Image (cartoon, chains in turn cyan, red):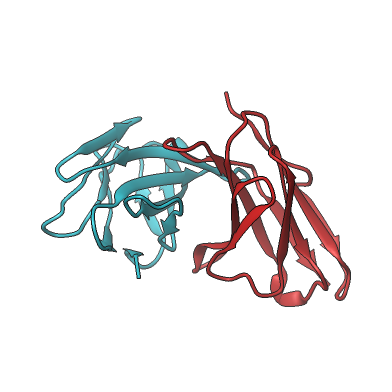
Length: 112
Length: 111
């Protein structure tokens, strides 16, 4: 079935460091891909999305490119801030389908 | 802005109790969803509904049921709560062809 795999474990980094969170997917057809962010004590918010191959989603300094050849949608930010500390989820929605499938999430902690 | 409101942020219930988790959205969305979130497991879909009185099982429906009598309200029911249902429960809604909006979550503890 359709699934999303995120890299294992929390990510701890210093302010202004570069962030990369890996996400790969398995899906039939042409899914839409998403990154969601969950700040402490809150629900999930859409961070960015891409709906077809080679699309780049971007928001708040974060970027991710839909790579069909590597079935990947890695999240990147060039210079993180303490306020970026949150849990980040990669997700996909299969084409013509109503449901989102989520990865397990990555806790990101940015230290001043 | 679309709002998805979950009635409680925190709940503590006893084993065997019947538990109702309520979710209300204010934008006439057709589709509503219940997920549970557990550390190391991410979000897993319990049930979803694509219209009033319509429901479909998600990936982990066992021990849960749902009710959608009105378009704006989607209730998750634990018929007999058990300790393994201690979790964070997230509701979401989505109009056809558009993105999801999530509620803030209900953290349920079953003792």
